[in-house]
Length: 348
Length: 155
Length: 116
Image (cartoon, rainbow over all chains, first blue to last red; front, side, top):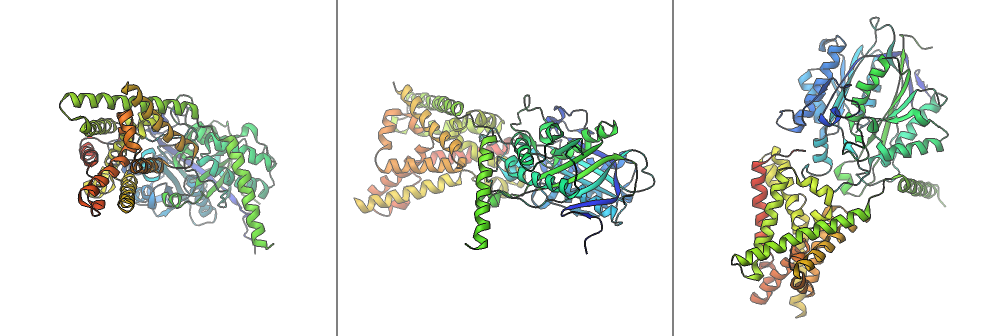
C-alpha cells in the first residue's frame, strides 16, 4: 500500500507544512567579509577563536548556532524533541560533541554537504508524522578541519587548480515546529525529496562541482516530475555548493531534462563569497556553505516577503580519502526541501 | 548480448558523454602561465642554491661537499617560511617551481609536523611527519637498492 | 657561466614536474616520487653526474638529486665492501638532508602553529 503522504517516487508532501520557527547562523572571518556579511548572527574573528584546536572551534560554532536559533525562537532546550545534525568530519564529531554539550536527544546524520537539506527534511517528517513537535536541524563545516582530513596539511605548499572550491567555515541551525503559536506568514516546509546516490565516474577530488551536478539535476527533475510542477513554480531553485563549474553543468543537465530555470537557478557556493575579490577559486563548499546562506540571507528574504517559494537542494559528495586512494570515483547525493511563505494550513 | 553487459555499456557511454560535458565546462588550468612561473621560480631557487654553494666553498668546504650545507640551508629557509605560514602562498603561486626543489620536500615534512601537533608530539608530530614525504624516501631507497644490485650483477 | 646553467636546468626540471601535475591525474606525491626515481635511474646510468658537473645547483637542488645521492651512496659502498654494500651505503650522502628536514621540522612544530 503506497504511503499516504508520498507523492511520486521520491517526494513527501507534508499534511501540515512545518514552520521554520527561527534560524541562526555563524560564520568565519572570510565569510564575514563576503557579500552576505550582515546576514550572520555571529562572525568569528579568526578560524581558531581561542580554542585549542579547529575541531573544537567547529563544534562550538554548531552549538552557538543552535543556541542562537533557540533564543530567537523563544524556546528552551526542554522544548526540543530532537537535534538532527551532521558535519563533514570522520564520525561526525562536531555534531556529536555539540550534542553532548547541548544535552538534546541526538540523531546524527551524514550526507556530506547535503546534510542541511537532509536534516531539515527528516526533521520535518518527524514533526508532520506526529513524532515530534519541535526539532532543530543543524550542520557545520570548517575550512581547516576539512583540509587536514580530506586533502593536505593547511601549511602545505601544493597548488590548487582554478576549479577547486573553498570550504566554508560556518554553521547553521533551523528550528522547526508545528503548533497554534505559529500562525501568520512564515516560511514553511511543504515537501521533501530524498535523493538517490548518483555517480557518473568523476574522480578528481578537487572538482566536487562536476561530481555533484548529476545528483542535483536528478533530484530537481525528480521533484518537479513527482509533483507535476511548471518550471516557474519556484522563485528560486538554490543548490548547495555546486560553485562555478557545477552550476554551469547542472543548468545544462536540467535543460536536457526539459527544465529551463534561467535566473531562478542559483547556488549558495556562488552567493557566499565574492569570487572576484576573495581567494576562493570556483566558490564555496561544505555543509556550512548551504547552511549559512539558508539560515541567514534566505530567511531574511522570506521575512521581507521578497521570496515566496524556494526549492533548496543540498548537494553532497560521498567520497573519503580512502576511496580516493583506492581509485574509486565520487558518488554524490542531493536532497531537496521546498519552502513556502504561507500561513498555517492543512493539505488535502 | 546479455542484459547486464548492455546496461554496463549504456553506463559507460553515459559516463563518457558526461566527461565530455565536464571537460567543456571545467575552468581551464592556465598551463602556459604555470610553466613559465615554475621555470622562473625553480630557476631562481637553483641560483640561490648556486650562490650558497660558492659561499660555503669560500667558507672552507671542499667543492664536492658544498652541496650538503647548501641543501640544509634551503631546507631551513623553507621550514621557517612554512612555520611562519608564508610557504603555502608561495606554493600556490609557484606550483612545481617551489615544490620540486628540496624546499618542497622540507615543506611537506614541516607542514605535516605542524598540522598534527594537536594530536600530540608522539602520535601527531612523530608519527605523521612523513605522511607526504614518505614515498620519496621509500621509492628512492628501493631504486638505489635495485640499481646497486644491477651494478653488482652486471660488473 | 654556471649560474645560467643552474637557472636553466633547475627551471626545466620544475617545468617537467609542473607538466606532470597539470596534464595528468598524478598527485604531487606521485610526481615527486617519479622524479626521485628518475634521478636514481639516470644516476645509475652514469648520466646524472655529468649534469651536476655542468649545472651545479641546478641539478643539486631539485628532488631528482636526492635519487642521485641515494644511488651514489649505494655504489660507493658497493665498491668499498662488496655486495653487502647494497644495503649499507644508501643514506650515506643524503644523511644531512634527511636529518635537517627531520630536526628542523620537529623544532618548527614546537615553535610555530598552523594558521590555516
